[in-house]
Amino acid sequence: MEISIKDIENVKIGNETDAANGTGCTVFLFEKGCPCGVDVRGGGPASRETTLLLPTSAAQVIHALVLGGGSAYGLDASGGVMKYLEEKNIGFPVGNGVVPLVVQSDIFDLTCGSFNVRPDQKYGYNACINAYKDNYQDGNFGGGTGATCGKFTGMDFCTKTGIGSYAVQCGELKVGAVVIVNALGNVYDHEGKCIAGLLNKNKNGFEDSEKLMYENASKVTENKFTGNTTIAIILTNALFDKSRLTKIASMAQNGMARSIRPVHTSADGDTVYAASTGNVKADQDAVGTLAADVLSRAIEKAVHTAQSAYGFKSSKDIMAG
Image (cartoon, rainbow, N blue to C red; front, side):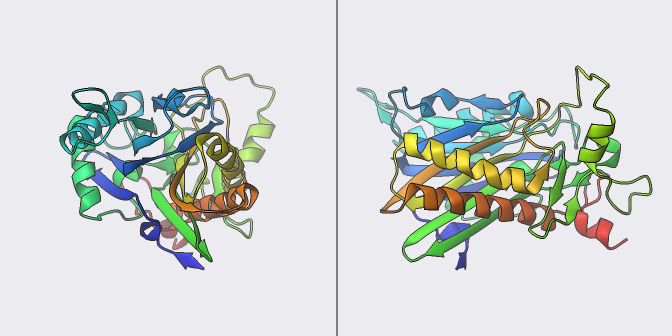
């Protein structure tokens, strides 16, 4: 049964959107702390504190996760999230205070909107305030404000995308995904139809990015257009530790591969997190399989809810002619 991503307990989600400058961030707050795993497949991730999630690291929970814009510059947003959580005394106890454990990944949106404006501590702090206002929505919001896809030949023929979510419930088990689609490749729906990506010369349909890549396979490109990264989080109320969540994040990458082609290239920074917010008993492989499906459908939602902006057409406007 389909549910809202907001129906998954023990997590608050907030968007901070800078529509004027084409950037923003989305924060996931875990007041009680929650285990989290990560799987990185792209060759160029912009991330912060991801080593906390390694099975060999001491930390067993995190207190927040940020998905944002601004590439490596935007990682400053986590400072604002830490400030907000510290004010609420949420974090890892360290004698006379707390240290909030905040993980972040960013997309490269610097070629969409203003290059010189990136999420900073104020963005992160405001996103936390908005999480308590329950302001999350799909489309050109939060970290997805400046997202695009289909950039194999650069920005002139790409499609405007955004942030999307999808969640399901099976008995007591809930599994959902939130994803920012900022891909080098094209996006396909569950029927295999291309719904976003590299535009044709008339900008009224799509070229096949994979085919174009194959046709140019003999040309070695040392610096492909590097403004790409699809980042996502799987949220589940099933009880797992971070080691098992790492496997679930790995399985969820199958959903990304199902929907985006090409994907996981050296020019992408594709990253999937998986977080456990509840105590429901569930089979790890079943949750991982569900995670791949909800991520694939969230990718579609990120395409279908996006609006044309910053000179880039959305899928629905392209399809409408």
